[in-house]
Image (cartoon, rainbow, N blue to C red; front, side, top):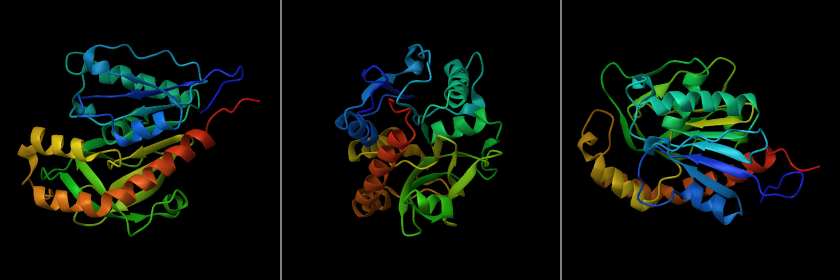
Length: 248
């Protein structure tokens, strides 16, 4: 539990972009650790909070929207979220972005976010190559991570690349950090019910170049998920505690 200077528990905001089957593994873990997790859903019309700079953290989660297609008439809430991200980074609040969240952080840093020219996308478990800074965060070359994305980012100026993907993944860049901001292209938060929801709601994508079959995804989850979840929980603990403005 992270408390403020007067002992109050500080909020940790989780920004969601779709109706997930259940709270994801990261949110469940943070709640179990005593964080005051407050879920905000701008896609439903909810208002983003004003940030004071004393928050325990912010998480920007994934979703079916594309930041490259956001306009004042199409998903305008994403444009508000870009300003929200800029505010969180400017106030030095610990920030984690997952998939769409990582792409929005990259876009807020003026990096390119795009589809592949050939239309390939990732859906399934893929290997990573951890960079030195990624290894310091616990990533390693033996990890398999869950991807579900058709867009990715170029490394923003000033950011440190943490991991890239093996050649079977259409999107090479997988994680970066800058200051108190961590951006993950992959999905360590997905539980088995959420993966089943993916396979139902987004099942039409299976079969596109780069994707794995449902059977491969199921096998990958059974084989690799426990290790991925263990890394994610430990990383959230480190990120939000080590980077928090602890009371003096």
